[in-house]
Image 1 (cartoon, rainbow, N blue to C red):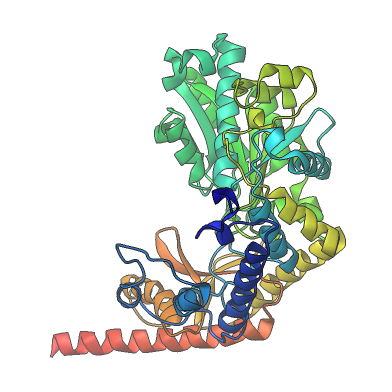
Image 2 (cartoon, one colour; image 1 turned 180 degrees about the horizontal axis):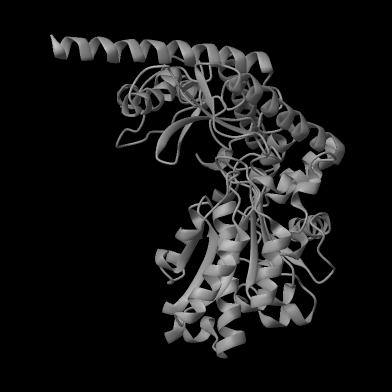
Length: 507
Protein backbone atom coordinates (compact mmCIF):
# COMPACT_ATOMS: atom_id res chain seq x y z
CA UNK A 1 0.00 0.00 0.00
CA UNK A 2 1.43 3.41 -0.96
CA UNK A 3 1.87 6.11 1.66
CA UNK A 4 -0.67 8.31 -0.13
CA UNK A 5 -3.44 5.73 0.39
CA UNK A 6 -2.71 5.14 4.07
CA UNK A 7 -4.97 6.83 6.58
CA UNK A 8 -3.20 9.55 8.56
CA UNK A 9 -4.20 10.74 12.06
CA UNK A 10 -5.63 14.01 10.77
CA UNK A 11 -7.55 12.72 7.73
CA UNK A 12 -10.85 12.25 9.54
CA UNK A 13 -10.93 15.89 10.67
CA UNK A 14 -11.51 17.20 7.15
CA UNK A 15 -14.63 16.91 4.98
CA UNK A 16 -13.97 14.35 2.27
CA UNK A 17 -15.89 11.55 0.59
CA UNK A 18 -14.07 8.99 2.74
CA UNK A 19 -16.30 6.96 5.05
CA UNK A 20 -14.28 7.80 8.17
CA UNK A 21 -14.49 11.54 7.39
CA UNK A 22 -18.24 11.42 6.85
CA UNK A 23 -18.78 9.49 10.07
CA UNK A 24 -16.60 11.94 12.01
CA UNK A 25 -18.56 14.90 10.56
CA UNK A 26 -21.93 13.35 11.38
CA UNK A 27 -20.83 12.47 14.91
CA UNK A 28 -19.60 16.02 15.58
CA UNK A 29 -22.81 17.57 14.25
CA UNK A 30 -25.04 15.15 16.18
CA UNK A 31 -23.20 15.73 19.46
CA UNK A 32 -23.28 19.49 18.91
CA UNK A 33 -27.02 19.41 18.31
CA UNK A 34 -27.49 17.42 21.51
CA UNK A 35 -25.37 19.90 23.47
CA UNK A 36 -27.39 22.83 22.16
CA UNK A 37 -30.74 21.21 22.90
CA UNK A 38 -29.70 20.16 26.40
CA UNK A 39 -27.84 23.31 27.42
CA UNK A 40 -29.60 26.16 25.64
CA UNK A 41 -33.14 25.10 24.93
CA UNK A 42 -33.63 23.44 28.33
CA UNK A 43 -32.15 26.36 30.31
CA UNK A 44 -34.83 28.33 32.15
CA UNK A 45 -32.57 31.27 33.04
CA UNK A 46 -31.03 33.92 30.79
CA UNK A 47 -27.74 33.48 32.66
CA UNK A 48 -26.50 30.76 34.98
CA UNK A 49 -25.16 33.19 37.55
CA UNK A 50 -21.35 33.15 37.91
CA UNK A 51 -19.56 36.48 38.26
CA UNK A 52 -16.39 37.12 36.18
CA UNK A 53 -13.93 35.94 38.85
CA UNK A 54 -15.82 32.71 39.60
CA UNK A 55 -16.25 32.02 35.89
CA UNK A 56 -12.54 32.53 35.34
CA UNK A 57 -11.77 30.09 38.14
CA UNK A 58 -14.26 27.57 36.74
CA UNK A 59 -12.55 27.69 33.34
CA UNK A 60 -9.01 27.62 34.76
CA UNK A 61 -8.18 24.16 33.36
CA UNK A 62 -9.92 24.61 30.00
CA UNK A 63 -6.83 25.96 28.23
CA UNK A 64 -3.83 23.79 29.15
CA UNK A 65 -0.42 24.72 27.79
CA UNK A 66 -0.26 21.55 25.72
CA UNK A 67 -3.38 20.35 23.97
CA UNK A 68 -3.53 16.62 23.30
CA UNK A 69 -5.74 14.81 20.83
CA UNK A 70 -9.12 13.86 22.28
CA UNK A 71 -12.28 12.40 20.83
CA UNK A 72 -15.27 14.70 20.64
CA UNK A 73 -17.22 12.90 23.42
CA UNK A 74 -14.30 13.49 25.81
CA UNK A 75 -14.54 17.25 25.25
CA UNK A 76 -18.33 17.31 25.59
CA UNK A 77 -18.42 18.17 29.35
CA UNK A 78 -16.24 21.24 28.82
CA UNK A 79 -18.29 22.33 25.81
CA UNK A 80 -21.44 21.96 27.88
CA UNK A 81 -19.98 24.26 30.55
CA UNK A 82 -19.01 26.87 27.95
CA UNK A 83 -22.51 26.83 26.50
CA UNK A 84 -24.22 26.72 29.90
CA UNK A 85 -22.39 29.81 31.17
CA UNK A 86 -23.20 31.91 28.11
CA UNK A 87 -25.85 34.60 27.91
CA UNK A 88 -28.97 32.86 26.61
CA UNK A 89 -29.97 35.36 23.97
CA UNK A 90 -33.00 33.27 23.01
CA UNK A 91 -34.47 33.65 26.54
CA UNK A 92 -37.38 36.13 26.70
CA UNK A 93 -35.78 37.89 29.69
CA UNK A 94 -32.54 38.59 27.78
CA UNK A 95 -33.41 42.12 26.68
CA UNK A 96 -30.24 44.16 27.20
CA UNK A 97 -28.67 44.96 23.86
CA UNK A 98 -29.25 45.05 20.11
CA UNK A 99 -28.56 41.33 20.22
CA UNK A 100 -31.17 39.15 18.58
CA UNK A 101 -32.18 35.50 18.86
CA UNK A 102 -31.10 33.92 15.55
CA UNK A 103 -33.54 32.28 13.18
CA UNK A 104 -33.27 28.51 12.69
CA UNK A 105 -32.81 28.81 8.88
CA UNK A 106 -29.93 31.23 9.48
CA UNK A 107 -28.32 28.80 11.94
CA UNK A 108 -28.64 26.06 9.31
CA UNK A 109 -27.03 28.41 6.77
CA UNK A 110 -24.09 28.89 9.16
CA UNK A 111 -23.38 25.16 8.87
CA UNK A 112 -23.30 25.41 5.07
CA UNK A 113 -21.15 28.56 5.20
CA UNK A 114 -18.63 26.91 7.51
CA UNK A 115 -18.58 23.67 5.54
CA UNK A 116 -18.08 25.36 2.15
CA UNK A 117 -15.72 27.99 3.62
CA UNK A 118 -15.95 30.16 0.50
CA UNK A 119 -14.13 33.49 0.65
CA UNK A 120 -15.89 36.42 -0.96
CA UNK A 121 -12.81 38.26 -2.24
CA UNK A 122 -12.43 36.59 -5.63
CA UNK A 123 -14.89 34.78 -7.88
CA UNK A 124 -12.75 31.67 -8.23
CA UNK A 125 -12.98 31.18 -4.43
CA UNK A 126 -16.73 31.75 -4.25
CA UNK A 127 -18.53 31.26 -7.57
CA UNK A 128 -22.10 30.64 -6.37
CA UNK A 129 -21.64 32.83 -3.29
CA UNK A 130 -20.52 35.82 -5.40
CA UNK A 131 -23.54 35.64 -7.67
CA UNK A 132 -26.00 35.16 -4.80
CA UNK A 133 -24.55 38.08 -2.81
CA UNK A 134 -24.81 40.32 -5.86
CA UNK A 135 -28.46 39.35 -6.34
CA UNK A 136 -29.27 39.94 -2.67
CA UNK A 137 -27.43 43.26 -2.70
CA UNK A 138 -29.52 44.31 -5.69
CA UNK A 139 -32.68 43.40 -3.76
CA UNK A 140 -31.50 45.47 -0.79
CA UNK A 141 -30.79 48.48 -3.00
CA UNK A 142 -34.32 48.21 -4.41
CA UNK A 143 -35.75 47.82 -0.90
CA UNK A 144 -34.15 51.08 0.22
CA UNK A 145 -35.32 52.98 -2.85
CA UNK A 146 -32.04 53.16 -4.76
CA UNK A 147 -31.86 53.15 -8.56
CA UNK A 148 -30.02 50.70 -10.81
CA UNK A 149 -26.83 52.75 -10.44
CA UNK A 150 -26.54 51.65 -6.79
CA UNK A 151 -24.54 48.76 -5.40
CA UNK A 152 -23.39 47.39 -2.07
CA UNK A 153 -21.39 44.82 -0.19
CA UNK A 154 -21.94 42.63 2.84
CA UNK A 155 -19.96 43.62 5.92
CA UNK A 156 -19.29 42.41 9.45
CA UNK A 157 -21.78 44.97 10.78
CA UNK A 158 -22.39 48.61 11.57
CA UNK A 159 -18.84 49.45 12.58
CA UNK A 160 -17.39 48.41 9.24
CA UNK A 161 -20.28 49.87 7.25
CA UNK A 162 -20.04 53.25 8.99
CA UNK A 163 -16.27 53.26 8.44
CA UNK A 164 -16.83 52.65 4.72
CA UNK A 165 -19.33 55.50 4.54
CA UNK A 166 -16.88 57.92 6.15
CA UNK A 167 -13.98 56.58 4.07
CA UNK A 168 -15.80 57.22 0.79
CA UNK A 169 -17.06 60.61 2.03
CA UNK A 170 -13.49 61.65 2.85
CA UNK A 171 -11.98 60.41 -0.40
CA UNK A 172 -14.82 61.77 -2.52
CA UNK A 173 -14.42 65.23 -0.99
CA UNK A 174 -10.67 65.22 -1.57
CA UNK A 175 -11.08 64.12 -5.17
CA UNK A 176 -13.95 66.49 -5.97
CA UNK A 177 -12.86 69.64 -4.14
CA UNK A 178 -9.08 69.28 -3.88
CA UNK A 179 -8.25 67.16 -6.96
CA UNK A 180 -6.43 64.90 -4.53
CA UNK A 181 -6.43 61.08 -4.64
CA UNK A 182 -6.04 59.88 -1.06
CA UNK A 183 -5.64 56.24 -2.07
CA UNK A 184 -2.45 57.14 -3.95
CA UNK A 185 -1.25 60.31 -2.23
CA UNK A 186 -2.30 59.87 1.37
CA UNK A 187 -4.08 62.56 3.35
CA UNK A 188 -3.96 66.08 1.89
CA UNK A 189 -2.66 68.99 4.01
CA UNK A 190 -6.27 70.20 4.33
CA UNK A 191 -7.38 66.98 6.05
CA UNK A 192 -7.00 68.58 9.47
CA UNK A 193 -9.82 70.94 8.44
CA UNK A 194 -12.26 68.13 7.51
CA UNK A 195 -15.36 67.95 9.68
CA UNK A 196 -18.17 65.38 9.97
CA UNK A 197 -21.56 66.13 11.53
CA UNK A 198 -23.80 63.76 13.47
CA UNK A 199 -26.19 63.95 16.41
CA UNK A 200 -24.92 64.00 19.98
CA UNK A 201 -26.44 60.51 20.46
CA UNK A 202 -25.03 59.00 17.26
CA UNK A 203 -23.20 55.69 17.53
CA UNK A 204 -19.65 55.89 18.88
CA UNK A 205 -18.31 54.32 15.67
CA UNK A 206 -18.65 57.68 13.92
CA UNK A 207 -15.96 59.08 16.23
CA UNK A 208 -14.03 55.82 16.01
CA UNK A 209 -14.17 55.85 12.22
CA UNK A 210 -12.97 59.45 12.03
CA UNK A 211 -10.03 58.56 14.27
CA UNK A 212 -9.10 55.51 12.16
CA UNK A 213 -9.27 57.63 8.99
CA UNK A 214 -6.77 60.13 10.34
CA UNK A 215 -9.31 62.90 10.94
CA UNK A 216 -9.34 62.50 14.72
CA UNK A 217 -12.28 62.37 17.07
CA UNK A 218 -12.24 66.17 17.07
CA UNK A 219 -13.11 65.98 13.40
CA UNK A 220 -16.64 64.93 14.41
CA UNK A 221 -19.01 67.75 15.39
CA UNK A 222 -21.93 66.52 17.56
CA UNK A 223 -25.17 68.40 16.97
CA UNK A 224 -27.74 68.95 19.70
CA UNK A 225 -30.87 66.78 19.68
CA UNK A 226 -34.44 67.61 20.64
CA UNK A 227 -36.64 66.06 23.35
CA UNK A 228 -37.07 62.97 21.12
CA UNK A 229 -33.28 62.63 20.69
CA UNK A 230 -33.45 63.61 17.02
CA UNK A 231 -30.82 65.85 15.45
CA UNK A 232 -31.99 69.48 15.13
CA UNK A 233 -31.60 70.63 11.49
CA UNK A 234 -31.61 74.30 12.44
CA UNK A 235 -28.68 73.80 14.82
CA UNK A 236 -26.83 71.92 12.08
CA UNK A 237 -27.40 74.73 9.57
CA UNK A 238 -26.14 77.33 12.05
CA UNK A 239 -23.05 75.23 12.80
CA UNK A 240 -22.30 74.88 9.10
CA UNK A 241 -22.31 78.66 8.72
CA UNK A 242 -19.95 79.02 11.68
CA UNK A 243 -17.52 76.41 10.37
CA UNK A 244 -17.29 78.07 6.99
CA UNK A 245 -16.38 81.34 8.72
CA UNK A 246 -13.68 79.45 10.67
CA UNK A 247 -12.16 78.18 7.41
CA UNK A 248 -13.04 74.54 8.22
CA UNK A 249 -14.22 72.03 5.63
CA UNK A 250 -17.47 70.11 6.23
CA UNK A 251 -17.34 66.85 4.28
CA UNK A 252 -20.27 64.73 5.51
CA UNK A 253 -23.49 64.58 7.49
CA UNK A 254 -24.29 61.32 9.27
CA UNK A 255 -27.93 60.74 10.18
CA UNK A 256 -29.02 57.99 12.52
CA UNK A 257 -32.06 55.83 11.78
CA UNK A 258 -32.42 54.12 15.13
CA UNK A 259 -30.18 55.38 17.93
CA UNK A 260 -28.87 52.68 20.25
CA UNK A 261 -30.65 53.87 23.39
CA UNK A 262 -33.88 55.37 22.08
CA UNK A 263 -34.35 54.06 18.55
CA UNK A 264 -34.69 57.70 17.46
CA UNK A 265 -34.70 58.48 13.75
CA UNK A 266 -33.22 61.77 12.62
CA UNK A 267 -35.27 63.91 10.17
CA UNK A 268 -33.87 62.32 7.02
CA UNK A 269 -35.49 64.51 4.30
CA UNK A 270 -34.41 67.75 6.00
CA UNK A 271 -30.86 66.52 6.55
CA UNK A 272 -30.64 65.25 2.98
CA UNK A 273 -31.57 68.73 1.72
CA UNK A 274 -28.95 70.41 3.91
CA UNK A 275 -26.33 67.95 2.63
CA UNK A 276 -27.36 68.56 -0.97
CA UNK A 277 -27.38 72.37 -0.56
CA UNK A 278 -23.85 72.31 0.89
CA UNK A 279 -22.43 69.62 -1.39
CA UNK A 280 -21.85 67.20 1.48
CA UNK A 281 -21.89 63.41 1.56
CA UNK A 282 -25.03 62.14 3.30
CA UNK A 283 -24.62 58.83 5.16
CA UNK A 284 -27.43 57.15 7.10
CA UNK A 285 -26.56 54.77 9.90
CA UNK A 286 -29.62 52.49 9.81
CA UNK A 287 -27.92 49.56 11.52
CA UNK A 288 -30.81 49.35 13.97
CA UNK A 289 -33.75 50.94 12.17
CA UNK A 290 -33.12 49.73 8.63
CA UNK A 291 -35.31 46.67 9.19
CA UNK A 292 -38.34 48.96 9.35
CA UNK A 293 -38.26 48.82 5.55
CA UNK A 294 -39.84 45.36 5.92
CA UNK A 295 -42.67 46.68 8.10
CA UNK A 296 -46.09 47.54 6.69
CA UNK A 297 -46.87 49.72 9.71
CA UNK A 298 -43.59 51.53 10.35
CA UNK A 299 -41.73 51.66 7.04
CA UNK A 300 -42.79 55.29 6.59
CA UNK A 301 -40.45 56.28 9.44
CA UNK A 302 -37.52 55.83 7.04
CA UNK A 303 -38.84 58.32 4.48
CA UNK A 304 -35.88 60.09 2.93
CA UNK A 305 -33.36 57.28 3.40
CA UNK A 306 -33.32 56.81 -0.38
CA UNK A 307 -31.67 60.26 -0.60
CA UNK A 308 -28.56 59.06 1.24
CA UNK A 309 -25.26 58.64 -0.57
CA UNK A 310 -24.63 55.54 1.56
CA UNK A 311 -26.52 53.42 4.07
CA UNK A 312 -25.51 51.12 6.91
CA UNK A 313 -27.87 48.23 7.64
CA UNK A 314 -27.33 45.34 10.06
CA UNK A 315 -28.89 41.90 9.80
CA UNK A 316 -27.78 40.64 13.22
CA UNK A 317 -30.30 42.95 14.83
CA UNK A 318 -33.92 43.10 13.59
CA UNK A 319 -33.29 40.72 10.68
CA UNK A 320 -32.56 37.96 13.25
CA UNK A 321 -29.28 36.71 11.78
CA UNK A 322 -26.40 35.13 13.72
CA UNK A 323 -23.49 37.47 14.32
CA UNK A 324 -21.96 38.81 12.19
CA UNK A 325 -23.97 40.03 9.23
CA UNK A 326 -24.43 43.51 7.81
CA UNK A 327 -24.35 45.49 4.60
CA UNK A 328 -23.11 48.76 3.17
CA UNK A 329 -25.21 50.24 0.37
CA UNK A 330 -23.93 52.89 -2.03
CA UNK A 331 -26.19 55.15 -4.12
CA UNK A 332 -23.63 55.57 -6.91
CA UNK A 333 -21.64 52.40 -7.49
CA UNK A 334 -18.94 54.40 -9.30
CA UNK A 335 -17.78 55.65 -5.89
CA UNK A 336 -16.50 52.16 -5.09
CA UNK A 337 -13.73 53.14 -7.52
CA UNK A 338 -12.28 55.27 -4.73
CA UNK A 339 -11.12 52.10 -2.92
CA UNK A 340 -10.68 49.72 -5.85
CA UNK A 341 -7.37 47.87 -6.02
CA UNK A 342 -6.14 45.00 -8.18
CA UNK A 343 -3.65 42.28 -7.32
CA UNK A 344 -2.29 39.94 -9.99
CA UNK A 345 -2.58 36.94 -7.66
CA UNK A 346 -6.17 37.68 -6.63
CA UNK A 347 -8.25 39.91 -8.90
CA UNK A 348 -6.22 40.89 -11.99
CA UNK A 349 -7.61 43.71 -14.13
CA UNK A 350 -8.10 41.20 -16.96
CA UNK A 351 -10.84 39.56 -14.88
CA UNK A 352 -12.87 42.76 -14.87
CA UNK A 353 -12.47 43.12 -18.64
CA UNK A 354 -13.84 39.58 -19.02
CA UNK A 355 -16.83 40.27 -16.78
CA UNK A 356 -15.56 38.12 -13.90
CA UNK A 357 -16.86 39.63 -10.64
CA UNK A 358 -14.25 39.84 -7.87
CA UNK A 359 -16.03 41.46 -4.92
CA UNK A 360 -12.82 42.48 -3.12
CA UNK A 361 -12.89 45.70 -5.17
CA UNK A 362 -15.95 46.82 -3.17
CA UNK A 363 -14.77 45.98 0.32
CA UNK A 364 -12.15 46.92 2.89
CA UNK A 365 -12.05 43.24 3.80
CA UNK A 366 -10.16 40.68 1.76
CA UNK A 367 -11.16 37.32 3.21
CA UNK A 368 -14.87 37.56 3.88
CA UNK A 369 -17.58 35.05 4.82
CA UNK A 370 -20.59 34.07 2.68
CA UNK A 371 -22.94 35.75 5.16
CA UNK A 372 -25.45 36.60 2.44
CA UNK A 373 -26.57 32.97 2.50
CA UNK A 374 -27.99 33.38 6.02
CA UNK A 375 -30.22 36.28 5.03
CA UNK A 376 -31.20 34.64 1.72
CA UNK A 377 -32.26 31.37 3.38
CA UNK A 378 -34.18 33.24 6.09
CA UNK A 379 -36.08 35.35 3.55
CA UNK A 380 -36.79 32.31 1.38
CA UNK A 381 -38.09 30.35 4.39
CA UNK A 382 -40.12 33.00 6.22
CA UNK A 383 -40.96 35.46 3.47
CA UNK A 384 -40.77 39.26 3.75
CA UNK A 385 -44.28 39.57 5.22
CA UNK A 386 -43.43 37.40 8.23
CA UNK A 387 -40.33 39.49 8.92
CA UNK A 388 -42.52 42.58 8.97
CA UNK A 389 -44.96 40.96 11.38
CA UNK A 390 -42.15 40.02 13.77
CA UNK A 391 -40.77 43.55 13.79
CA UNK A 392 -44.23 45.07 14.28
CA UNK A 393 -44.94 42.77 17.22
CA UNK A 394 -41.81 43.97 19.06
CA UNK A 395 -42.71 47.63 18.48
CA UNK A 396 -46.22 47.02 19.82
CA UNK A 397 -44.74 45.29 22.87
CA UNK A 398 -42.41 48.23 23.52
CA UNK A 399 -45.36 50.64 23.41
CA UNK A 400 -47.39 48.48 25.79
CA UNK A 401 -44.67 48.12 28.44
CA UNK A 402 -43.81 51.82 28.17
CA UNK A 403 -47.39 52.68 29.15
CA UNK A 404 -47.19 50.37 32.16
CA UNK A 405 -43.89 51.93 33.24
CA UNK A 406 -45.26 55.45 32.81
CA UNK A 407 -48.15 54.66 35.17
CA UNK A 408 -45.98 53.07 37.88
CA UNK A 409 -45.12 55.42 40.77
CA UNK A 410 -41.83 53.59 41.43
CA UNK A 411 -40.58 53.88 37.85
CA UNK A 412 -39.72 56.76 35.54
CA UNK A 413 -40.07 56.47 31.76
CA UNK A 414 -37.44 58.32 29.73
CA UNK A 415 -38.93 57.98 26.25
CA UNK A 416 -41.88 56.98 24.16
CA UNK A 417 -40.37 54.20 22.00
CA UNK A 418 -39.78 54.96 18.32
CA UNK A 419 -38.83 51.37 17.56
CA UNK A 420 -38.53 48.83 20.38
CA UNK A 421 -36.06 50.27 22.92
CA UNK A 422 -37.56 51.37 26.24
CA UNK A 423 -35.45 53.50 28.61
CA UNK A 424 -36.58 53.94 32.21
CA UNK A 425 -35.34 53.72 35.78
CA UNK A 426 -36.26 52.77 39.30
CA UNK A 427 -37.31 55.99 41.01
CA UNK A 428 -38.09 55.78 44.76
CA UNK A 429 -39.97 58.66 46.34
CA UNK A 430 -37.01 59.39 48.62
CA UNK A 431 -33.25 59.36 48.15
CA UNK A 432 -30.55 61.61 46.76
CA UNK A 433 -29.74 61.72 43.06
CA UNK A 434 -26.45 59.92 43.78
CA UNK A 435 -28.20 57.16 45.74
CA UNK A 436 -30.78 56.62 43.00
CA UNK A 437 -28.02 56.49 40.38
CA UNK A 438 -26.16 53.88 42.42
CA UNK A 439 -29.29 51.76 42.78
CA UNK A 440 -29.96 51.85 39.04
CA UNK A 441 -26.34 50.97 38.32
CA UNK A 442 -26.54 47.91 40.57
CA UNK A 443 -29.91 46.56 39.43
CA UNK A 444 -28.76 45.10 36.04
CA UNK A 445 -25.71 43.42 37.62
CA UNK A 446 -27.69 41.77 40.44
CA UNK A 447 -30.53 40.82 38.12
CA UNK A 448 -28.10 39.00 35.81
CA UNK A 449 -26.15 37.23 38.57
CA UNK A 450 -29.40 36.02 40.10
CA UNK A 451 -30.37 34.58 36.71
CA UNK A 452 -33.60 36.57 36.58
CA UNK A 453 -32.95 38.78 33.60
CA UNK A 454 -30.37 40.52 31.43
CA UNK A 455 -31.19 44.20 30.95
CA UNK A 456 -29.02 47.14 29.88
CA UNK A 457 -27.94 50.26 31.65
CA UNK A 458 -27.26 53.65 30.09
CA UNK A 459 -27.13 57.34 30.96
CA UNK A 460 -29.56 60.12 30.14
CA UNK A 461 -28.33 63.65 30.87
CA UNK A 462 -25.75 62.29 33.29
CA UNK A 463 -28.16 60.09 35.27
CA UNK A 464 -28.22 56.26 35.32
CA UNK A 465 -31.12 54.53 33.56
CA UNK A 466 -32.21 51.00 32.66
CA UNK A 467 -33.17 49.74 29.22
CA UNK A 468 -35.24 47.01 27.61
CA UNK A 469 -34.16 46.31 24.02
CA UNK A 470 -37.05 44.23 22.74
CA UNK A 471 -35.73 42.49 19.64
CA UNK A 472 -37.10 39.05 20.57
CA UNK A 473 -40.58 38.58 19.03
CA UNK A 474 -41.19 35.71 21.48
CA UNK A 475 -40.89 37.97 24.54
CA UNK A 476 -44.35 38.70 25.96
CA UNK A 477 -45.86 41.48 28.04
CA UNK A 478 -46.12 39.01 30.91
CA UNK A 479 -42.35 38.35 30.70
CA UNK A 480 -41.64 42.07 30.98
CA UNK A 481 -44.12 42.64 33.80
CA UNK A 482 -42.35 39.87 35.72
CA UNK A 483 -39.03 41.62 35.09
CA UNK A 484 -40.43 44.90 36.37
CA UNK A 485 -41.49 43.19 39.61
CA UNK A 486 -37.93 41.87 40.04
CA UNK A 487 -36.46 45.29 39.23
CA UNK A 488 -38.62 47.05 41.80
CA UNK A 489 -37.92 44.39 44.42
CA UNK A 490 -34.17 44.76 43.89
CA UNK A 491 -34.50 48.54 43.92
CA UNK A 492 -36.34 48.46 47.23
CA UNK A 493 -33.73 46.13 48.76
CA UNK A 494 -30.85 48.29 47.57
CA UNK A 495 -32.63 51.43 48.77
CA UNK A 496 -33.20 49.93 52.22
CA UNK A 497 -29.56 48.89 52.40
CA UNK A 498 -28.52 52.47 51.62
CA UNK A 499 -30.82 53.86 54.34
CA UNK A 500 -29.55 51.38 56.96
CA UNK A 501 -25.95 52.13 56.02
CA UNK A 502 -26.59 55.87 56.43
CA UNK A 503 -28.24 55.31 59.83
CA UNK A 504 -25.27 53.29 61.08
CA UNK A 505 -22.89 56.02 59.91
CA UNK A 506 -24.79 58.65 61.87
CA UNK A 507 -25.07 56.62 65.12
